[in-house]
Picture: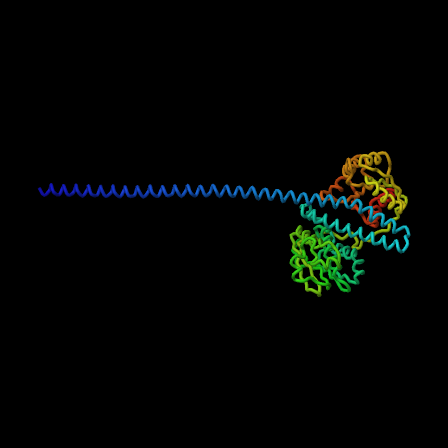
Length: 452
C-alpha cells in the first residue's frame, strides 16, 4: 500500500514538473513572439524612416545639383561674356593707342601733344584693365596652370624692376633689390607667372609710395639637393593699410576705400591676381601693414634647381635698336582700321608690306610671293590665323611668322608655336615691342640667310 502511494506521489511530481516545463515553455514562447513582434515593428518603422530620409536626401541632392548646374552655367556665361567683351574691346583700343602713337610722331603742337598723351595714357589704362579682367577670367575658368621651364630668377626680378623704373621716378621712389646670391642661378618654374606676380606687387607698392623706398627681397631658406625654398617679400614705406581694410584687400575690385580708388586709381584686381597665381604654385600671399608706415607682402615658393647647367648666356641681355628699313612683309589682318595702322607703323620704319584680308588669301599670297616675314592675325572670319599658319608651313617652313593676337580665354600660346609661329605679340601692342619682335625674328633671320 505504501509503495503504491509512493508511486502515485512520484507520478504527481512528474506531472507537476511537466506542467511547470510546459508553462515555462509557453511563457518563453510568448516572450519570444513578443520580442519578434517588437523587432518587426521597429524594423518596419526604421525602414519607413529610412525611406523618408532617402526621399528627402534625393530631393535635396536634386535641388543641389540643379543649383550647382545653374551656378556653373552662370559662371560660364560670365566667363564667356567677359572674355568676348575684353577681346572685342582690344580691336578699337588698338586703333586708339596706334593712332595716338602715330600722331605723336608727326610733330604735333604742344597743345595737341598734351591731348595726345592724355589719349595714349587712357588707352594704356584701359588695356591694363582689360588684361586684368582677362587674367581673372582665365583663373576662374581654370584655364591657367604653372609651367616648368629653366630661368634665372635674378634676371626676372631685374626685368620687372627695370620696367617699373619710370613709375618709381614719377613718385620719386627708389626700388631696392635685396637678392641672396646663394640662390641657384638655374631654377625650374614658370618665370612668366612669377613676373606677373612681382609686376602686380611692385606696381601696387609704387602706386601707394611717394618719396620713399620699395624693397624687393629674395632669400634662400632651404636647399636639399634639387629642392629649393625661397622667401620673397615686397616691402614699402607708403600709406599702409588699416586692419579693417586688410580683411578684404585680396578681394576683386577691392582697394580699401572709395577715396583711395579715386586718389590713386587702378582696378583693385592686382592683389586678387597675385593670390590666384600663387595658388597655382601651392603658395599663399601674406600681409603685414601699419597704417601710415607702410606694407609688406611676403610668401614662400618651392622650386627645383638645375645646378648642372652652365651659364652660357650673359646676365644682361640688352635690346638692340634694329634698322628695319628695306624689309618686305605680309600683313594678315581682317580689320580695315588695323590694316591702316599696322601699315603706317611699318612704313615709319621703312618696311614695305602687302595686306591679306583673311586666312585663305594669306595662304595663296604666301605660296605665290616671297616675303621676309608674315605678321599673322589669329582671330579672323573663315580659317583662323592658326590654321592659315599650319597650311603655310606645309610648303614654307622657313619664312618667320609672328602671331598678332588679342588673346582671348581659349587662346593658348603653345598652340600658336605648335602651328609654326616663331613669336607672338598681343594686341594692342606697344610700338617698341612690335618693332623689337620684327627685328629679332624677321630681320635677324634675313641677315643670317644672306650670310649663309
